[in-house]
Length: 170
Length: 253
Image (cartoon, rainbow over all chains, first blue to last red; front, side, top):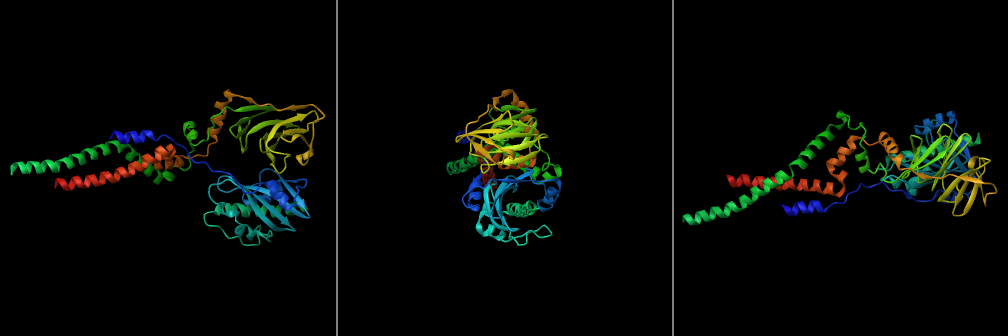
């Protein structure tokens, strides 16, 4: 009896696991890789209420912050966007060229599950996608089982990246 | 012959007494944990109907268990009419908790804009506190940032390991080199008396529902290794009590 109580009392450590942050590529390195090894001077778009209204249709809510920074190189636009997966933001880099997604890379992942969306087999599905009139991507992106929310977040950001490319040309 | 019988009965009664003692002991020791498992299980089963999936936890003690309330001392600085506080990665403008986070190094107020600098990022808000812009490492001269300050022309200066930098308009470009004009650097001050009010903001802003807490109590994980071990032990106790109970039942027959 005493042994049992002693064992219970001896185990005294406690703690609750916290979700970790994994940086797969620094945003600056992503921009460099997309812009010929240098970071061009950044530009920004200020999202007006009419932009935000369109973005609400593309991702279900307004984009924060209201200014979105982007970089251009040989006509391409590089933008780094954040969107909540389940509870924490996923930072993803998008390269858009002539209205089409050229490259997608998940840069920083902060959720505990769903990081499979960083795989090139998944991100390559975005290549060549354009923004349809209905606000959907022209290419079908297959979901990854167990990473539904992360997949959804990546698609939403993809739609916004294409929309921002349209806005910057206006 | 009578002696043989009494010896035989004595031998049989010894394990029975042992079984009874352990049955009693385990029953008494694990009565409360088992009762808790049953009650918490029922609460989880009917959590939605009872509103536990919606009701937010407002206990500072519980939120501390979930590491939602920091342990250290808050740092505070003034920027224009705003009071900016940083507490273990959480950032507050006056009495509002921001979604943005990081280790606060300072804040400066421009006409119509508020700049909050953390070690890794810089956040810009308008005069109403609306989130306008974020400068990550890709838009900053270097990270970590050391100090943020303002000169008389309302230009934002940064100090990093690479030296001193001054931003141009819209924070799109920066120049590196010693400032030619005096810079007023933002200074953080530790403020233990701010803890209570910031803790209250965190409690009010809590996203934790009672459903989550009861799930963690049911599995024991709210109390870490000890809790999980106790729940495991309670499960084993049910198993042992069942075996002992069955054996006692059949021996009596």
